[in-house]
Image 1 (tube, one colour):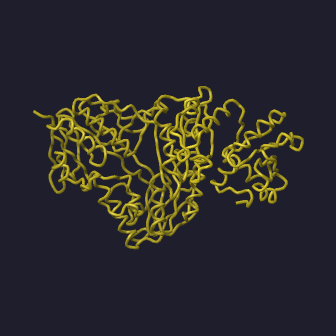
Image 2 (cartoon, rainbow, N blue to C red):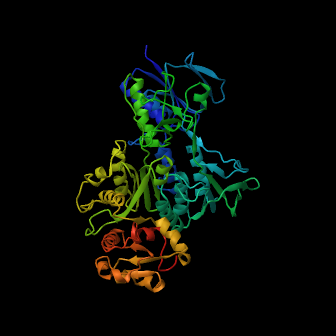
Image 3 (spheres, helix red, strand yellow):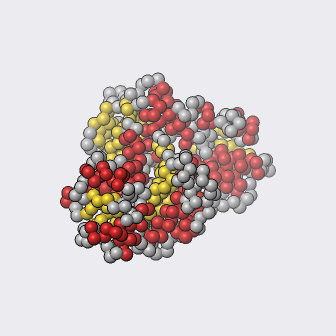
Length: 572
């Protein structure tokens, strides 16, 4: 008799596991259960449905050959029985049954041979008054997306407030502003966007990108209430009150583990996720689980972590489907790769940020570069900013992040590192990483190789650096600080800065700095600057040879400052 597999959850992992099982073991009986009416959709595409990049909601539910993944499709094309609008109330592990309640029906039991928990995640609740007002909603399901789309497309929203500046918050800010011209504000409790995900350097560049596109960004503010009579009308924070027609709650997610907990399955104390083996098996050998609700090993830290990503869920779903059919597929863990598009700029990363690495106990440092994605002489080229995180003693690479308007090119560099990060690569591995080179695709010394070389120079003490956020703090307090900026660019590049700040801005090209050592102060901090940090690094070497060790090279140079929006020539 064929086995009966019950899968709880029908968005990403559940359908993938079901279809993989049916391909490998066609005689298996599969029942897919989900509380929502709409199943098997691309949830990560919701912001692009709101923005209009995806014009039809059905596109998020179709296969590559344009078949809609609804209940009849799964029954006819895949041989999978679907129970939508059905809640699973309880798991009886001893009797191998689940108690379900279909819409407008009495609870009943369904037996299983194997059970899959693909229960996903839910929006993190915001414990303030007013979150239940009409016009205040998360964007966690297709139902949410369709309700929001109806409000936006019918002109009911002139002003919107987004609470939370994580991935969903920023993607929704882009969607509402770019297509619909909605006056949009983003409120974040932390001091930067994408908190805990990107470095302060890249976050500051994202801040400028958001503000340049009309987003009002309020950082380090706590929302205390959402107010209105019968609908959302205003958001109150610790510092202001914002009038609004719409509030989007984007405060993160929590794993849905209530069923697992009540059934006595083992959970991670650190994350709250369901603990699984590398074969995606829970503490019950007849129950497998994956997706947003599980804790898997972070292959950089070695600790259980949550990775609420649709891509992760699909890969784990295939492993589960294979193993349900008697296979021994494994999912080793993850290094934590991410990407986001903010208007015409993309940010991507993998592994740990510097702050996260230090919090995990690593004695780490970061190297930053800005360089063209293609050969400098090739007519079509775009700058890429990369930040590489390195453990000092072992020279192990712990993570990398990037930002560029060439989204694919930048993400390609991040993915190259992600593919080897679990093997604990060193700086030398990245420095010598083989890139498919041709002038239209890369430089002979690719930006990825260069950032590793910069890291090597930092660790060896040849490149003594200052990062943009430290420079920005110094610059803001320059009247009370003792430093000068030595601009190593050509005179025409430095002229506006010299005119604005003659007392603290000097200009000597990197190629001639050794001829002017006597003109430089010996007892004042000298911050070296060029367009990218390369010429100023050469100048630093020359000055060190001449006995000047009071220099700091600005990482990424003027290129990074410009992306920050910090312009000393105008005091902006």
